Length: 193
Image (cartoon, rainbow, N blue to C red; front, top):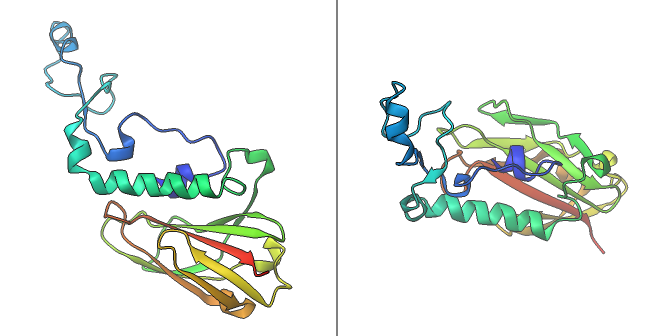
């Protein structure tokens, strides 16, 4: 979700309840009227327009999903200079990588040339953690001349100062999606002062 929507350079689009994986139910008063047209359902199914009623008990059952969504939104808010919704003002580049096991989702970076980059690494697998080896395109970020760079894992808060060459094979693991803390990682790269 974070990889494709919240961190992407567009206005985020969410349906009610997605932030905590809510079940979408049919509005009970709609069911009798629909039955006369042959519908025999107690809850909404994909493809219907009856997704207006949320099971709010899911919020209690899915606290980890809700906490992950809050963390994703906080990362975006704290880095609004890079993770904004103005796609025409966004510097965006794919980040070359190796992934084990292989995945379809490709890491990408949004950046302010010469100052700051945020690399988004997504894992769509719900069964495997994915180990990525990223080849950070520092020259594209306008930081190819920097000898030392400050690197922060925005998900874990871990900070380190690395040599330019170390970012040619930067390793990060994205835990499996739909698990607490899983599905996405965001790595911030900045020049040291």
